[in-house]
Image: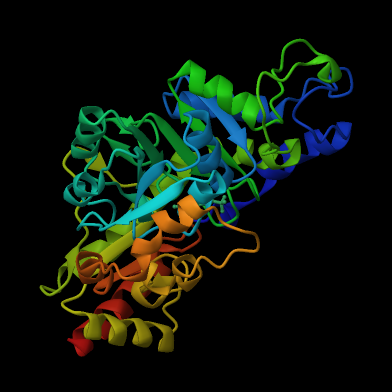
Length: 397
Ligand SMILES: *Cc1c(COP(=O)(O)O)cnc(C)c1O
């Protein structure tokens, strides 16, 4: 996945364009910037790549999720349904707006179970947030259907699945708003950065203003701009956008490498009858950023994960025992450890986390191992890795 592995001359060239003029900010300074508008250019590239009418770059993927929710009017006391398996950014972004994260079970797609979503809907629910984890996607037809039937927003966090598709549509463009991260370890990196995509003009205009202190971006005198509503600063810098611009042009090259490496690993593991793979919904194609497979039970998964570590098989994650991606270890969330007071409404809305259990999520995450697919591996490296992984799994069964 990480685009940084192939950082090179193309990225340096774009950054040098910016360094040459010294205009590090994406807005204004028209006379000094010598025609360089890296953030705008990157937005255009993303618009084309993602068949989206509107793209707003922001400072991170976490900011993208918050900006997407805020732009669609989600805020204090609203409930947002999200999966138990995701990155911590999901609930951070929701809680930043004073909204309430409602965590529900995942299924064999490794994201939202449509049944669990439907059961969690209350009169306070405003949005469903599907997180397209590890290069693949949820049951998008079912989730779209539920969101339409209940008049809820469908937000797609596609931070880990850039380049994947569902029925020919790029992931991120299926729901009402899609979010991407370009942090240092994502398939496309800016160093730090993110994007919101949408076909809804009002949401886009909101995102454009909200991510820059509410500026309406009318005219070319920043000081004279008006502020139709309150905003924040989630701007991306020109330097970051420049790196992303070089990287996004290489997306197809990166995806082809991922697919090639993924296929070698998957073919090898497929020969073990006890190994099964995460379900990709019909009509879906992964981005191949990760290969996810299931072992027969938790004990075997733990054993295999440990042996992978002992034998130098890096970048394999057993998320059940990992601090960052699964609810089991999110004590700070369950205990609402916050530096500042949290509203009574959110406190009360999140009491369920003290006691709620997620046996279905445990069933899938406990048995799942996820191998990152690197861009820098040679074919020989992947084949050696595959052989070692197969040997370790077979002796652990
Ligand atoms: C990386 C990631 C984010 C957050 O992105 P940052 O740019 O690091 O803030 C959000 N959601 C998912 C699923 C991610 O993997």
